[in-house]
Length: 382
Ligand SMILES: NC(=O)c1ccc[n+]([C@@H]2O[C@H](COP(=O)([O-])OP(=O)(O)OC[C@H]3O[C@@H](n4cnc5c(N)ncnc54)[C@H](O)[C@@H]3O)[C@@H](O)[C@H]2O)c1
Image (cartoon, rainbow, N blue to C red; front, side, top):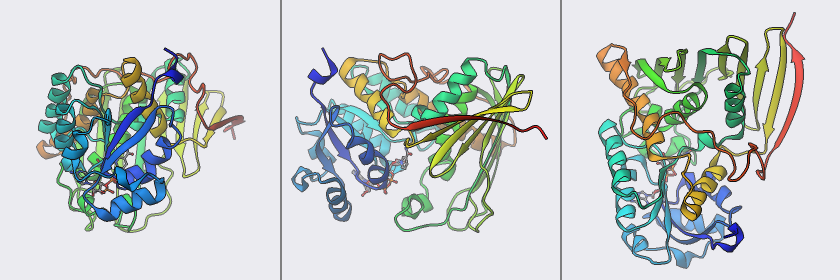
């Protein structure tokens, strides 16, 4: 059947906080051919009012609680965007109610619950169940992955990435949510934000075989370690270091760029508010830079991937297993820090290397997607 002949997925939103406002709604409103919001629920009257205010969604679509929403026959699938400690129980109930589920990350508050997410997925093979990881869908990162797959820098041997930036509670920002300041999940910010970084590392560098982690608490505004230093050994033979720091004092602007060193070149990935850059540097000092503008963080394509899975039975690139694999790197890093030992990572059943997402039915990376790209060449020779 032609895609246009298939009715949109009737979507229920469980939780309408910041992630919906800033990430999901901007994507959903451009995907009316695939999704129609038919119900939403949030225990906070203020959040419900705010959501209907900016989205134009009929306030009458509000339901009293998630049980009422899950009982509705006009809800095929749910998008779960509740605080991390509640993701599992809501996903469990939604699957039990027979809904397809796109649940926010991370997959589990700890290793035990990560295993619980895998068991939930195994127990519902007839449903599309994804724990989201938008990073897998970001255009600049997919482009970098395609370059690496094509041998653009030869054999990757070293990954280096330092991500440092001030973090203090700010009203209306993710850091302002009280549940993030007193995290009831192991790893704190390194699980919340860190799983995205690990996803980027896994997408580009492949599977992680061993970790050595060190952590430190140096931010009085968050009740969890603010610093993580992580040494990595990849299955493909490369090694790497990822350092993440969220201090409470202002720090000078940092490049926060990821560098991938290969036997035949270097790839540099830079991210700013307005654009993302991928620069390939050759041994003769020439550089080839592609700049991406007008793209989101992968939220739109993630929703497209989920819709393709629900409507056409396609295997989604985002999966519970992939999100568990991301989360388990963080959990193992904290195990390593506690035990003062380098630790092996067990493969996550059903995960394996992150597949490279392409628009359905397309051989190209960007066919039909929004955003602009421009390329230039230069030299770093003195
Ligand atoms: N993919 C990303 O880039 C990204 C970014 C930010 C947040 N997130 C994820 O989104 C989720 C929500 O984060 P947020 O920043 O929007 O938090 P938030 O606190 O702004 O919003 C959460 C909302 O859920 C509501 N809620 C709480 N318990 C609920 C329940 N049982 N049923 C229904 N609603 C409930 C709250 O009232 C609140 O409105 C988290 O899991 C977080 O990890 C993902």
